[in-house]
Image 1 (cartoon, rainbow, N blue to C red):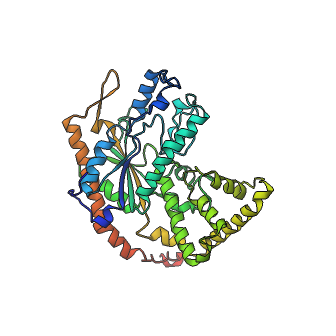
Image 2: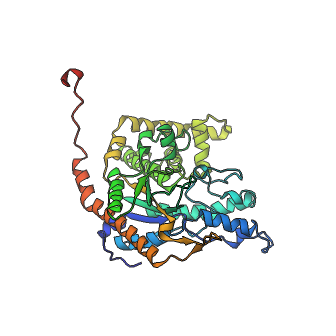
Image 3: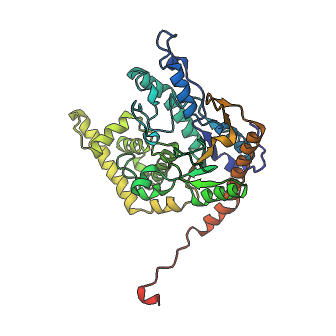
Length: 401
């Protein structure tokens, strides 16, 4: 891709904006398509094809590419592995064969639950999930915003038509319980930070621009952000990185201590992939028995964890992070599939997008890019100047008359 788009961002800021498509990949490596003999399919091809077509976010790349171009980005990121095999937008694990709730599925697809053995699944996560994780961490590491482009079906199960687009920023567990489900991430993460994965100003600017461009937009419908999504995991990861920077600035002598490094490994393990982090997590929060030779190290890590938690409680870290214009935003955008691609009415298989659909994809990309540029150029500087303004106290009852 060549920078130089209609809404081109300043280079320093453009490098901090990430556009990615986690579900528009088509690849199933032969290693997982065939049995060990290299000839027998692991999954019935007809079953696999149907599920593959259902699960792929057809047309997401067709929006992400012109969006990145319009903003003058060097590239956008796309996951090439087919979602039917591996979904990086979920926590690692194997989805039970009888699971019917997509928001609670795990990374390895349902139809591969019995088709892959234990070693296959370990290899799949080690080889692809962790490689994608490293790429995403590099992409979002010092970012200001991450925009995930998805597409969803034209109608609900009730056959009523969905909105043209939906902006997704409310985590699933917060929608259900007004807090994160205990144990999903470390409980040191403040629950109220989970009320949104994205700046409301940015979200509403994108919504307004799309509506002005003739598209019907809804928010957090028909589903919210899964707890295991990149958007939610990134929010927790960014906060604990912020906390670590502040803590180590206050206590530089802890930087090389094994106990503190173990605590940061635990807190930053938002992908739930590290056995080292899980060992401390289970000892710290589940009070599990450990081998005597490991006890001293774990006890030291618990003391370090309490030190970090006390610092968090007694400092202004949470407030500073919550109000900071540097707090990264993670926004998922769902686009109705029929706007950007077509399907054969008999086979259900996708067709090449026609000229009108290509133009629609470009219009959507242009509206989103314009909103992001306006947010960075206009909204964010205003927010930076006014974030310290305090609202007046609510008057006492006697003052209301």
